[in-house]
Length: 380
Image 1 (cartoon, rainbow, N blue to C red):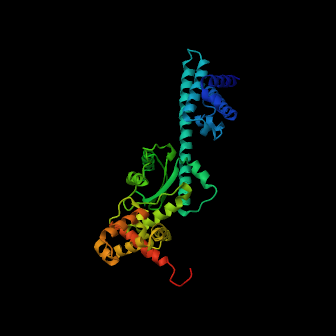
Image 2 (tube, rainbow, N blue to C red):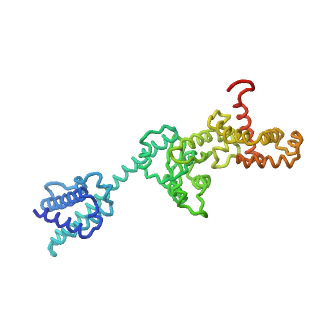
Image 3 (tube, helix red, strand yellow):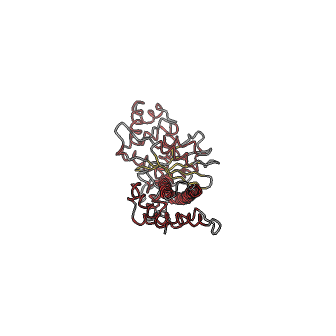
């Protein structure tokens, strides 16, 4: 009978002193009441005969449904324990030191038990999140999406908005996932992290949508974000895939990054990180169809559609060892005309033929593009 009275008094005190208690659904409040009653009943049974049945404070939470851990935080649980102890102490006579000491001992054990329950739940949740995150990253790398992928991404708490890039490098001997996430947060970015053997893969998204940025506050380029995340990778090459519009398109960036990572060793002075599109020639030579289509669709066809003169001038300039004078002599034009046309080439496609590395990319595009052309007199 006394346990029922104490439980009722405890619930009444909870309603009067804890605003959040009245806001949780009735079913959850009922579960809290069961936990409070179980704790008081267990304490009374143990105090009356400590040797009859050994009590375990963790059993107090056995009556609580699992979802209660997700709706009531550890701090709120400790508030519940404190109020329950205060209600019981109010019924104890001031001179009953034995009972008061027993209450303190029991409340301490219940508090430790609560911390243990929440720690186990957090550990289980962390393991589940890690498995789910690995599954999502694997789906992105393979490009095999299903209808459940959006819900899996939402369950991970993905905060990315808009554009996404994939960063591929070597996994370090001691991977510090928390440090990678902290660095990303400081850069207004969010990351999904996956480890595949010796490779470490990061899917990077912007944590704040562009609409929230002012005109003077441009979002950080993904290459800058990758440079800040670079210390979290192991030694070796680090390749950043091209920017794609959203997370559902991330497989395109991932395929480019993986293809670039596979051939990055062929670029002797490759920076770290390297853009996957800076490795287009090596990727195309290795048989990457995405690199071939990028070279054709982003360089060869735009130049071909814009002006035959630009395409011809670029061919001659590269074939003549990037010599303005030799190109001008072959085309019977002034060197300044060649210089002007090369500037137009850069404006049309974004690559500058006067740079050694970019010249290689452009020459690869011309070779691949010309190979893709149908033979004269033969139907496509």
